[in-house]
Amino acid sequence: MRELIEQFMHYLTVECGLRPNSLKAYSADLGDFAGFLGRRSADVRRVTDRDVGAFVAAARRRGLAPTSVARKLVAVKMFFRYLAQERLIEEDVSSLVESPRAAKTLPEVLNTEEVEALLAAPDASTPLGMRDRAILEMFYATGARATEVAEMKVGDVNFEYGFVLVRGKGGKERIVPVGRAALDALRDYLSGVRGALLRGKESDRLFVSRTGRHLERQSLFNMVRKRALAAGISIDISPHMLRHSFATHMLAGGADLRAVQEMLGHSDISTTQIYTHLEKDRLKAVHSRYHPRG
Image (cartoon, rainbow, N blue to C red):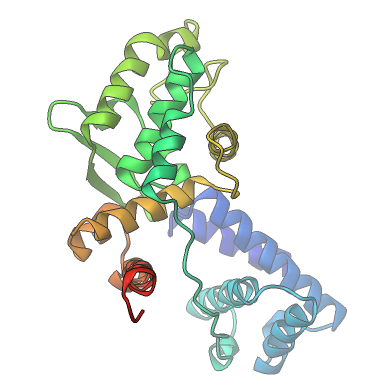
């Protein structure tokens, strides 16, 4: 089982181009599945759909969230599909197991006042404050994910035309417009701060740490939380909430749904449509508050 999982992980890395975080999740979920089969003394080549269903049921009994259970089943289904394609098993029995339907939850977003407070929170008179303001502006200007911002390179920003190259999931690239405020913050950071942070080191990364190394995804999460507290925002926020806010505010301003889909890098427009529900909820709240018979 361990050898088969290693082969599958190599396939996900080389053939599918999955990112480290996704690979880590697949590895953990399949390790969980392997442990489950081991306790049942089941051979992976003789697994039945009942075994897979029992694994899902066991995950539910452990109190895992529906999204976590669904993710584990996706990992198992992908694994068995690979084994069947490679003819390492005779039949993909996991295809007989129906995926649980996870309830759709609307993402939390910041209102425009909270976004303005967050963007103004870093002290731009300090090197790290100038860097963090540029990062926050980039998040809100592009709707990019944390990993995408962390991996941006200096050459990805086109100041003349106001665009940035964003490298998304699966190695897909997209061109996203960047507004004047974000470009101004980036110019200030590049001209007065980045070189000082590098301390003579060489790096093609756009944003670097206080020691001149490239920023990790988790560092961006920590920075956003820190700046949110400084801005007086009480809720726990993350870079992804800025992504949600970007999409919601764009649609509220009249942006075309497909344009927002392209900027976010969504392969399926149904993923982007969730933000239209957020806008409808906002309009209903306004109607309820201000209409005489609301």
